Length: 188
Ligand code: PRP
Ligand code: MN
Ligand code: MG
Image 1 (spheres, rainbow, N blue to C red):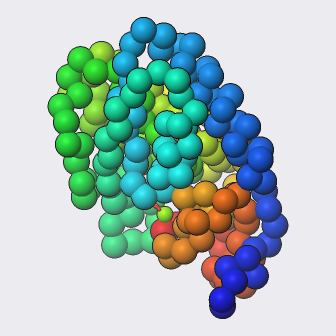
Image 2 (image 1 turned 180 degrees about the vertical axis):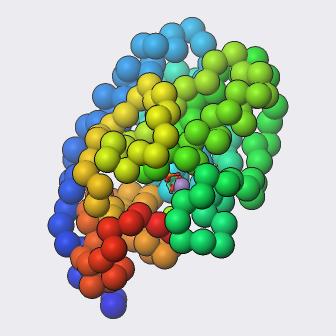
């Protein structure tokens, strides 16, 4: 297919709504962290778009770091067993760390990541996610900043992939079932 939009079922959150929400989250974060410098930790690769737009919407000085983790091992179901593929460059001891995610699905990746980062002694640790699927949660995670709670549908775009594609759509949409087989499980 030469136009990935042919694989869409529908647009769930249009570009303007995403950008409005990110400005709203940034204003809230600026107010909450007044006087404290934030270290944004983006979780590769899904968080790249949120990270780039959130960082530019913040007025406070920030630093950025990145982690890459693999949560699904060899199986297709989320196992909660997480491997670090790329660790942070810097020590976070005493820093105000804000994890930036595109989506919380089962919550297993973030649950593991939070306890891993907490053990490194940050001054504070919070999470900002653009999307969350309450009906898919397998574990509760304390998330301070949430853009949108969405239904348990397979979503793509704005960083979210199916088989590494569709991350560059500027909006969040659902994938037509004929493309992914229609199981409804968000994987990959
Ligand atoms: C996706 C998403 C979150 C995670 C959420 O990443 O970006 O990081 O899954 O799932 P969970 O709440 O069920 O743990 P993925 O592992 O697909 O890697 P990617 O960001 O490179 O696409
Ligand atoms: Mn991810
Ligand atoms: Mg993915």
